[in-house]
Picture (cartoon, rainbow over the protein chains, first blue to last red):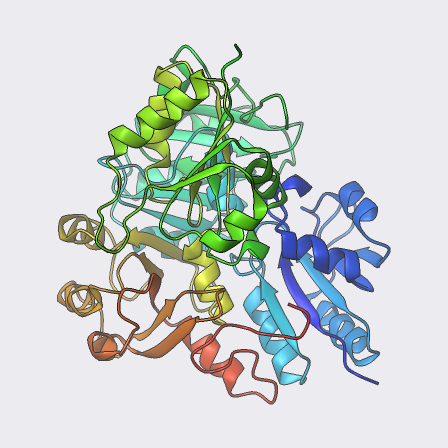
Length: 257
Length: 257
């Protein structure tokens, strides 16, 4: 029996309309889909007849250990099944895509990477915030906010008040993250944004100053990104025009979506 | 007459299979498409009956000035035409998407942002290089390599030998960029990669050390990214296994693509 292909697929920020065409095809043709908590489950069920298992963290259940996920993928592929490992955003932006690729390669399982729309760029964009802007930000740094050591390590690597910063998985710890940024020399007046559930009907956006970020009333438990830097002001400039593309507390919305 | 919607759409790294579903729909339904040089023109012509104009830089022609692009979009929208402004990668990662959004908003033209797969993440990923990897890189910095002042400004903001660096639009200037990185304290032994035409049939990848980057024989005039950091070694580790997913000098390729 032929070994099945494993596809490490990015699902984008949430809305299945932002899946890539290749991702949609892999999902449709899969026999087994192991998906993360950030993926839109109802859209997934509509798009495939594959067996679907959530391996991410959910209410009252921890995420499935990485070793187990690797074993499930390898076993199914050896049974000749086409496996999709579906991750929120892009599979290689955090989310351990590299570790899974190495585990598959070492087990002799053929695999591919299907890049996705990364939430690090799309969540700010859908809220009207470009991560780069001529004369304002000549680059951007993406980091994860869920472990303090990694945050300190990364913040030590960057000079304050320079490039835009996008922090994934940091909304819950926003107060601590804002304090750490300020401790590392970022000005409390730096524009900052929180964008939760970007691209979804319950999208939620807050903008303000870094010093006020801890007090922002973000939805409890929502997935989201923190953006820190002058680029946040582009959203404010867009909202100040006659055609505000960005409703307060929501993403860009138009007829035809 | 109703004003037409302008969609600022990301086309991803090249292969139209990596367009998002929304991007494909906007392209299909458009009346006018203004596209950048990095977009796959043949795929575009197959996907739409819209009028298509390249406004990017091409052989023997400079790119159309930004002011003119803005004026063309605004005029067509006022004529009731649906306009797609199609950009390689993501519209808000360099490429002046923010400036176009502001111009449209100030002219009272309704617009939306359709995020795309950014080449900054996808080009390394398709070459087997995750921009983050647990224990190796806790973040990544994306910058553009086409102007020296911006490069120096951005490099001054980052401590050498920390997070992964991805440089867009820097393949032509790779020798100068490598020298600048080393002048800013990056070790010549740092792993480095050049990935050109990612996702396309003529994809080309080189890996080596930062100090050798200037001498790498990259295809002349090809679009590509430079990656600098320990994560480049993941590609080498994948290639060393029994199922090399990454053919030398090419991206991940499998039956079924």
